[in-house]
Image: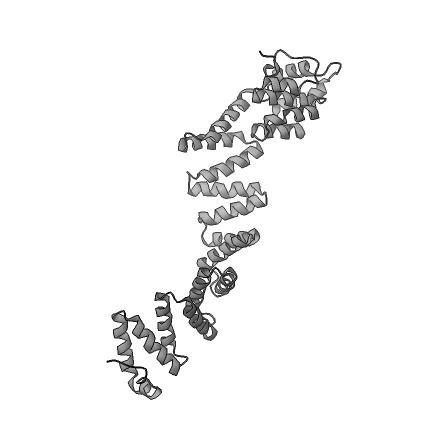
Length: 344
């Protein structure tokens, strides 16, 4: 049966609706979407609120990638059914293709009001927040997502980024530790935990994770360098006797240091909390460059603890000539300080 537009009138619809449905069914089965579109367009002209016609025309518009028609018809449906999730989803899809992120945000915010645990809406809102550089919003949304999906690594990764921007290193460590529980070979998580461990002077953790890193990436230069630093720390850090000898030999001429000023016992235990200790941690964390030695020497050359630090810096980098230059304010050399020995 063929139905032309002239045949489809209001009275015909009332009398022959079953025949019209059969014609549409046959057209859909034959994938004759042009015929479906023609008939349903005509029906919609006669019955503007015909839901079946609107739905069929949306389906055809999607197949034809006619975004304008999808948007027009789904907007019309949404006016009649404000909580229609299917209409919202289609309008979100159109807004994404148009790169209309404000509209995506508006629609998915509405979708989340209707369906508070909607993961798709959360994900889209997170992506929009990232585009806007709104990391507070990213943090809020991904925290909610993690409540719904406790093992979602993508949410954790975003929360790690937010924590880094806030310099919340404890939170970075907590999140990445959880990531490692879920993905034991996640090198990014290892790297972040190692970074925090260096800041905290937790060399056991650095050693453990960088050892694992080398198993995964045998040529990892940073892992090799960090393990060498740990070896140096384990082998020579806070040697009471050598520190006292270095201090005695390196002090400026005419300057007398008391036993109290040596602070050797506290140094040996690693318990002092001052600028020197902080610099030492930075040194072994790889955060002091050899170019900084002269500045460090100038700043601390009249301080007993500073002399120890300078000696450690020089020893660490094994730069005898640079060390000599940095320590030029001292009048005597110490034969036990290998880093400041004159070498040909």
